[in-house]
Length: 297
Image (cartoon, rainbow, N blue to C red; front, side, top):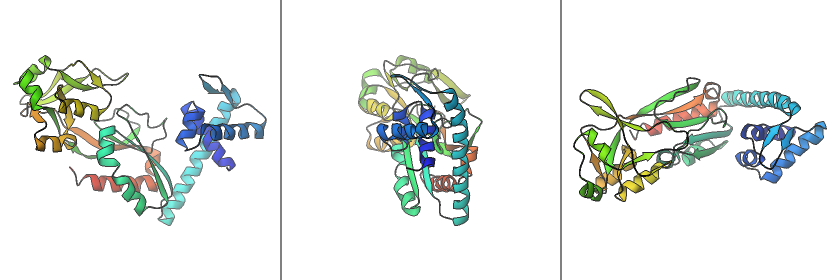
């Protein structure tokens, strides 16, 4: 492995705070990643990292070295992007992230086609319904439902994604059909929650404008597909994107609840750090994904 590749390992290990996590992100075993760090330390004759059984932190010289190494890697990536822009052949790795259900249904099917069209590009797709720190996790492109709060990121809207409140007929037979939004307080609402998530509410479209409804339920999850499964099992009312439950609604396995006051649609789009959008391979993938996804909405 070259010196520059060892620098990449060191930078990712420090960014992620773990040799295992840094190695995994670069598709290296913990042993190989650890050896790359040791090679750098032997090269300079200094300790770059303090290691304990629970924590890894850079030493004082390690922190200074990290700052310079990170600039070297950024400069190299920018140089590669410049060459790619002239050659017309994108090269390198694109790191993508998306919510679980959206990623499985809409983003994952795009990846093989894109890679076939662009053989010089590798794609790493990470799916999670939890908040992802795009900058810290070195994400190039993040697909997102909702309006992001971070103004330092560039937002590209793809479409409005309609949502519906849905439940299984069996649940409504047992517990009754809500007639007005306030009736949701008497029902088991299936919620998407995760540690440090904000207080949960549903915003419904009414004749007088958006209405915020505080809702609750006996159980929640951080996986949107689990919410859909619970709804199909007759365990409560879920607030899901239409693309996710369209087949269930068509089959009658789920029905819309309060169809005259549906949830506000979610904005569907992609996020990228401003600098990375200039990378041709990121821009090309974004254009490709937006073009294909607009066919669905």
